[in-house]
Length: 119
Image 1 (cartoon, helix red, strand yellow):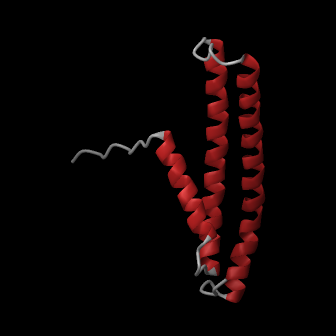
Image 2: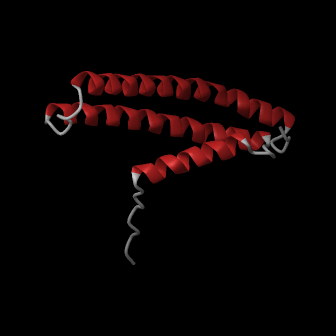
Image 3: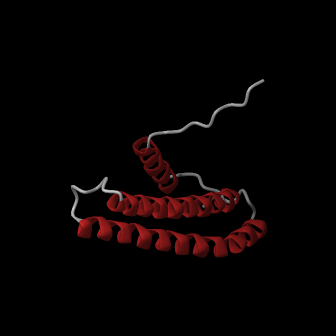
């Protein structure tokens, strides 16, 4: 039996899917405390992944600037965008850490009030 190859989506499809998932989380009508605990863990992991993605994109911009692939773009613009991506990566990392520090509180609240308590 062969192993399945990982699915690789074009970045535009992955970003669109991410936006749709975030919207679905924001509009979830029947959230329960037990779900909140699981959701927080997934959101933390997602934000860490987005921080890494922003860092990687900033690095690719820098490489494209260095190797001439972005020679048609103004260097100041490429540098500014790379800096914005690095700042966003830092902010996402800080947000992930803040949410992660709240996870024990969410677990305690769910244990106290009941995991099936609707929010």
